[in-house]
Image (cartoon, rainbow over the protein chains, first blue to last red):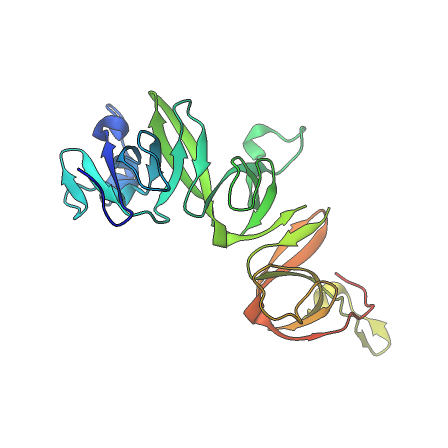
Length: 174
Length: 94
């Protein structure tokens, strides 16, 4: 199958978020797709921006079985927009895509502060991947609650990465 | 430390309000905050060229949010929150 209109086709491993013997409290109230749906997919047909064969981190609501973008089996069609968060290389290195800047938390406190009292600063972040005018290691500031934590399983290990939409960034230290 | 604003955000340091009542200087907690400040940095998407670093901004009373960095309190404003600009006033800042 060949993708059209700048779209890409990806395959998803549904088992990546299935955990056994663990109680997910959020399900008590409603079906929490963020906990249950996969976010990591492999590109089967790329476009000019995304090559074939790499892994992508995508918004969890993209991989729903009754989605109109479900092509059957484990194949989905994705439009190239900001719901594609990042690419993951074969070595596990992540890179932000479509206006998403990947960052890490900066914890308040000094070396004397006990670990349990260290809290992430709600405005200040450290960039972990180059792109969109920001370099790895830059200290940036963002709107409150701009951070979005992506949890994914890569090579059997649970990984976490935080992304901020480029438009939510309010400044950087130069 | 130098801060560079991004997008259409403007970083402002508020001027200090010094009020006297009956010859007695009121403490900071009893004074209203001024709606004027020094523009530290304006983002690259700020379209109004009068809103630029080093000028004085006059802004809406409830606009923006504050960030404290290295004991300096900055007010983060959107371009649309600024209602006027003026030349730099050599006033004490918060």
